[in-house]
Image (tube, rainbow, N blue to C red; front, top):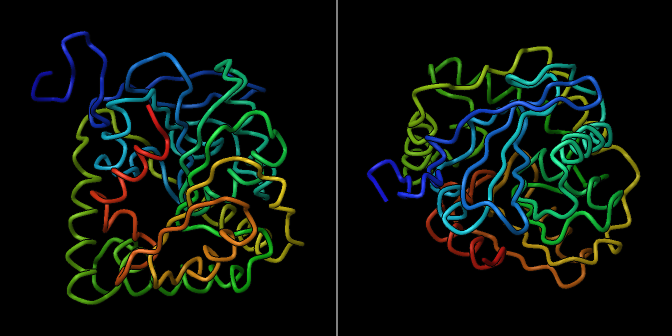
Length: 288
């Protein structure tokens, strides 16, 4: 393996070096990246609100890609993917299924965060034989208590970030104490490690449509999560202001046999603040 994280057999295991690719499905061109050894069941990553493929923490992806085929992608209307952002989480799940079908994937493991976890739930419920293992981080169930307040929280923290010329994720994802501020700066710096072939930023209209879809998801009737009969790992910080931490406990109660990790002194981005410990847990959970 050389200094870039690329083994001599040319299998890329560093997310910074993962090549960008495209594939067309149902009239949309999806932008995606893949890395890690081919073969077996891939791990597909579902990203958060207002995020593109550049928002994945390489310190979480890289340890998984050492053992597994990893795929990240942009939903329609996001980043470099064409099309328009739909106004519901369920429609986003349908788009994700179109993408996976175009790649001829009939069995996957899912790693999801925040809004991505909402999409992943709908996908797994609608296609029960598709998802083998499921990671739900910083997310909550359809109809989850106070989830619809995400709109106010998001705009308020964007305002606070603007006043201090900071990245909104520093406020949305991390506590505003010394530990949280240090973790936030480290996380933002890791997201900048890829310097070439970066993704296109999310447009304001796409972001606003996603936010409305999350609000609708939060105000909808709950899904029957007892139907998720698959190994599930749930993780969050103990002070998630975006998707209240109590909703991770709610998911754990409703998904039989699920595992729950709540990281101390951390917020919505608890898995990024505690990335070293969480990456080890995720690798073990997902298996080789």
